[in-house]
Length: 325
Image (cartoon, rainbow, N blue to C red; front, side, top):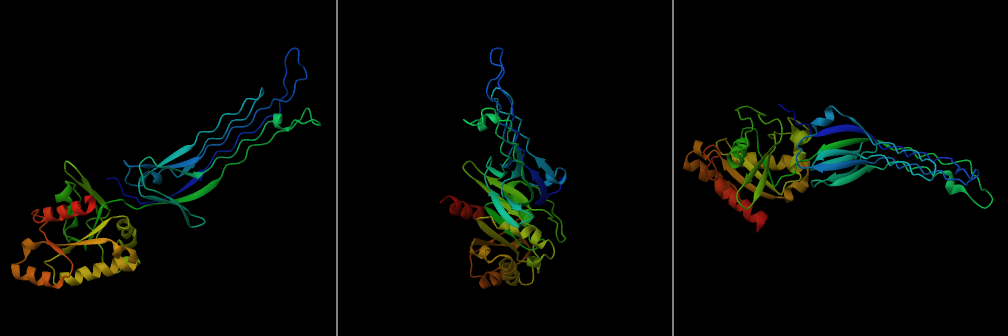
């Protein structure tokens, strides 16, 4: 199984600029021609490129060093050295690029084929033709190319989805994802069945809705307990938060409030996102328990049995209306 990796550290080096050259024009009848040393080529840049076909930073586990090509040296007859090829590093959409040593975010890659320059290649040196003057007819020096830059970059993937599924382990998030998208995440009755964020896409003739199933939150997740901080950031980019609460538990309303507390302690801005609540596993409880649970929630709740695909249509309908109204 491919391991999901959402953080990576790489070293990047841009290409060195080519050297300018010292050269004098020579022809049969011009033994003392003027300077014609060409300039060195520019070194290759380091370019980060978004790729919608990627969903993990796993490849950077095996390749951790990337270098742009050096520029070519100039030559006689004012010939410019060849520019070095840039190195293009493909990353999933939603990847943040940090200068690890300065601990500063450089940029965010959000679109397919978006190109951002992380390092510029070194400038090529000037040939001796540039240094000719009225008092210096035969300059015998040229510039060396500028060296490339080096940086250690930290890559951090934050998944992009329309809806983030929030809930405790075994609340039914993976079952819901399977029901709406046909995705097949691992499902079983123990904590942290979902060890990686799973993406699922609901589609019909007109629209696509992307759901992100985030590994189950436990108390203290904002402090890194359980899977904690490893995955909480993946709900930061979603447009909606769909809380899936197990109605068969002793106090589903308390469970919901604890979930709210954990995400607010991680990032209070998440509470500004539109929230939907699905009370799941209604097939396991009687009507009185359902009514008692509903009476405690002030926010609109959906009644659902993800296992039986009951009540899911209403959720999809309202999300559609909100996204495409």
